[in-house]
Length: 555
Ligand code: ATP
Ligand code: MG
Image (cartoon, rainbow, N blue to C red; front, side, top):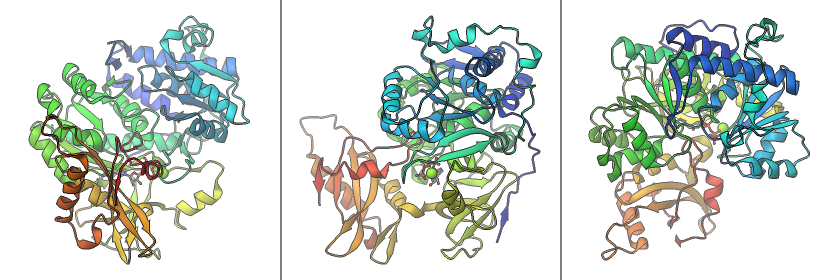
């Protein structure tokens, strides 16, 4: 059975995505509207500045670096108020923006730089040496390295100097938006994102202008329903915390929120205290968050010292969030509704989303407009309502392909063009979607399937647990995979009566075992570790977790 979106159809224009986002923003706001505000310094970029910087940077890339349609320009920076015009400028120039994760090691960055064959790289604060080390590791030359870091202003490699020599008044024929692109925007790549590689080496995900515009419009469509029912405000103050280098930050924050005329308060780096302070001081109304932060909101005592009453909605995405944590958060912050979005980089990324009007604690949302879904069993047969299987999607936001990887591209699409997500879930009669686990991470204990995310969700509810993950280890004696827990314990405030960590871990295990079927028990024991390695979106990086086993282990 094929499930169709119940939301009304949208017309996706055939234009440059930067042009789309900026003209919508301009249409909905005044010239001096502050689109991006720096939460640490109060500096800001207005809509007119944003448009001018974007154009100037696009023209400079073309005239000084010879950048043409199809060329790749990489960004390697933490969030800042200047990041967006860099990304918009690259795509406005007709080139492809390949954002690299700012926490990459030289090895990880080297892979992206050479795989994408990027010609220019724009580098943020404190990251230059990583780029230089990365370039030594691979046989790939980058034409220009430009620094986004404000402390480089006045230096030759500063992006601001690079743009400054461009005349403020750009000739009509130089206008990046008005010069038509040879390729059709439906197939012309705008972004080349690399998935965070929690389950394998990152692949380049080719997202076209049309993919990205469609996704911003799909998200906006659902949000507008909330405005109509006055559950949301027309102009929101968003938190710019989700990393701009990930499809999540790109699509929801840099595209959707900007095209709705919102104000985005940018956080360069995350700490829970800084986050709370920013919400209070800037009266954030809408927060795009990830599960670990929602978890902290529900439990951390520091929350009580701040006034977070401006915030009416928290949208969590990137990884699973348990209904109990949602309830705990809403009880603690009565003005806040917690909703979820689901997607993957390959879908630009949003595919299903809840709205404050379409509420369901256990669900990851309803299907966004212009798209179709199906659930299939292991043989690829279509399943019906409430029957769990692999979720597959089709829509204008679904990627074109993986870069230079026809095999991987062939493998992810089925013969009818549906993208096979590797996520296990089902769809109910009302059209709500549910994820029960990730195919690639299911633990097989003897014949039984154990879903790590289910155990992780439960563990996160325990008062002694700061963060937790569950992963398969292999038991040679029984010749089967068994689940093992990785716990980050809350610091104990009272040192005199501190309980031994191993005893606390053991108590957590016993607590969990009272709540789950026998086959789901943590037969692999547990390790107490300092922190769970997570991708920026909050997903457990299982390869790294495996290497942390030596620290402390209870079999
Ligand atoms: P992966 O290891 O799956 O390749 P990635 O590093 O490529 O991850 P993404 O593309 O952002 O990063 O990950 C997409 C995956 O994140 C989805 O396939 C799904 O498993 C998970 N996910 C995203 N949102 C949710 C959600 N709301 N609930 C549960 N899982 C989610
Ligand atoms: Mg992936």
